[in-house]
Image (cartoon, rainbow, N blue to C red):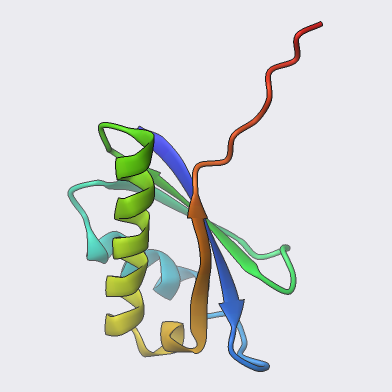
Length: 97
């Protein structure tokens, strides 16, 4: 399982979609691999959404997250006002001390 974070940018002054609607649209886009969706509403001006995905590799997870966003944005009108800036697994450096 991988955590992939989507960074979404609004078109103009678009308001964030309802959290429940966003979660439902993303989960419905690929219910066989989306394990959990978490929306981080405190991140401005961009919206960050965490997807927990079942995938065989990091690259596969990031590619799947992009496809999931594209499908969700095409099928859910409020998401059409937002564009995907990044879909990536957050990498954290190890503390070597």
